[in-house]
Amino acid sequence: MKKTLFLFLLVALAVSSCATTRYYAGFTPETAGQDMVLLGPASDIYYLDKNNNDSYSDTLSTVSETLIAGLVEELGVQFSDRIELDADEKEEAAAFMRYLINQKPNKRGDYAIPFCLDEALEAQGCRYGLLLYAQGMTRDAKGYAKDVAKSAFLAVATAILTLGTVTMYTTADAFSSQIFAAVLDAETNHVTFYNYTPLQERNPLRPDPVRKQLRSVIKDFLK
Image 1: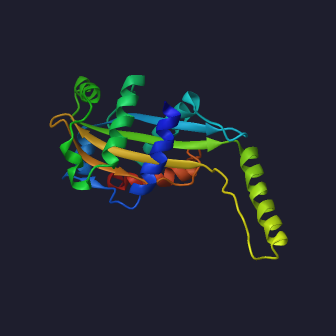
Image 2 (image 1 turned 180 degrees about the vertical axis):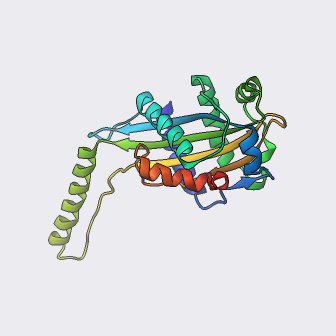
Image 3 (image 1 turned 60 degrees about the vertical axis):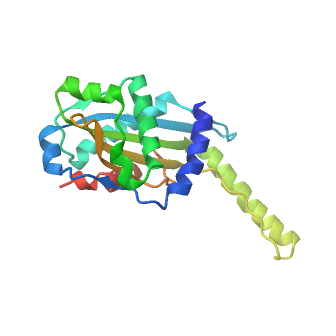
């Protein structure tokens, strides 16, 4: 189920990558610093093996969540505490973030936040929660190198056989990474900030590219 959903999202997100990403409803970083907690993060990371078979990895998803939580703190986002989400809450968070990407930017604040996340915020006694969600794919390095070599060989072979009139390539399945951010308001039960990065060909488990994506998506909260 997760595999099918992921393939569908790759197509949907590619189509929506040219759309306006940011929704902002008067929320200020100064307010966040006084009354905001970090929700999650939540991640869905897939692994592509050397035979090009992909599967959801709970272990790699956890690695991604730990990486993002550490980078958010490193970047200096002001939040008073962190609420770790259980499996059901992560599933709700992921579905909500993916749902909002297909809504009109100026309408993203119209949709009620998931009840379980609203409850988590209220139980903590905080009004705002910064929710971060990542999805992506990492892969076997040897398998990727083999695919690139096959593509290069095919290009050379077809060019020789056709005397340079035709050059054929195959595309190697690479890494992919995308990060979503939203600020949930427990008082109004709606989103007051939403942003995401385009789906990019980056390793979702490497600190440097993920740091750049995070900085882009939450730059409004950085000093």
